[in-house]
Amino acid sequence: MKRILLLALPAAMLLAGACAKTVPTVVESIDAFTEVGDTGILVDAIEITVDDARSIKRLKSSDFDIINNVPDGQVDRETGGPLREYADDGIVLSRRGRTLRIEASPFSINGMRGENYRRMPWKLVCSADTVLNVDLQRVTARHTAILDDCIQGSFTYAGITREYMLYLPKDRKGETLKNVPLMVWQIGGGEYNRDLWTAATANRCLVSLPAEGIPCATLVFAIANPNYTYSASLYPERIELVDRNNALQMAFIDTLIADGTVDGSRVFCAGASSGGGCTMRFAMQFPDRFKAAIPCCAMDPIVPIHRVEEKYEGQFADDLEKAFQGEVYKWNGSEMALAPMDTEAFVKLPMFFVHAASDRTCKVASSYAYFEARKRLGATADRISIFDDAYMQSYGISPMITHFSWVPLLDDFSEGTAMDWLVSQL
Image 1 (cartoon, rainbow, N blue to C red):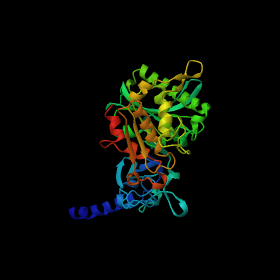
Image 2: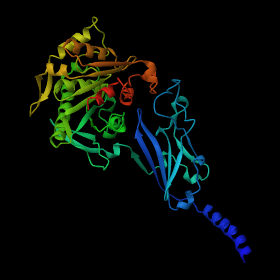
Image 3: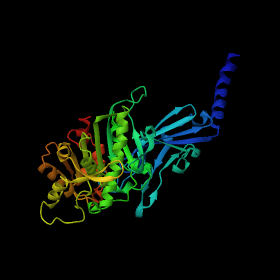
Image 4: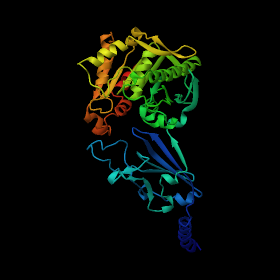
């Protein structure tokens, strides 16, 4: 009798194993977990939920491959050539009930570009079960780190209404921290007249500090300006609108201060390109409200600098020096009206200028001129950092598009950088 049982047991086990393999895979949902990258959204993980856990029980990491998965950036960081697929996808598998999680090295949600810039979508391929093949079209839900925790809303002031996205840091219990510092980011011209999601994901402005675990609130508004273009300072109606948007943002910040969400003595401003110019205007309007500012590759809404030539060496700095002792628009309760700026407070406000040496969109002469003009007026706490092509390439930025100096700005927290400087003041 015992001999019969010993022979029957393996047979039963084989039969059970055979039955397990025949359980069909029925996918109920596919979730993509993403993050904001330097030049777009990146996919970090895919979760596939099936109707029967047995159908995914025997799967291994080696059963999966991801094609057309390239890292963040415009070019290969080492060679400067086209982006290449990951040699190692970095796939790690885990299971939770009926859900299979596939984590991987973060890759562009847009896939890669082939010959003639032809878009080649990414695809997760399962050699053990083609039902588990996934591409972007099959994804049923998307989640974005940090941004999913942001507050979205709209605010009206000075006769205009703008949408905003606000991140508020939390403690380990998930409770929102009070009286935290705030960094408000000024969007670039490429995001003007676009939706809030575009403004929030154009770069890492909202996520840079939170991703480093730094307890600082971050804020961005979708600004519905027509792009104020080069030499915008020659058009009063455009500058009035820039200043009006800034007035709205400061009024909103005041509500955060009033309810104890933000510490009014630790408000910071930063922005890039057109947003770098708006940062300068913001500081000219409210110099006593900010603790520090970072204008990055700033445009010229103060005096014409780009697309014009200096009449003599030092003209840009001369023009700025005069402008920094002039007037700005402020909301007086019924309209935006010109008022003298507080030059003394403006000069005392520490600034860290950032620019790429080869920037072809906003020439580096602007940052040098801003720095020099403020120095002449007595600024002693300003700093300036100019990035060469090799440094920009190390962040995946092509020498042809070195305007993207906000990429290393928001990524690099090493000693002496602008972000390290800002964090030291939080």
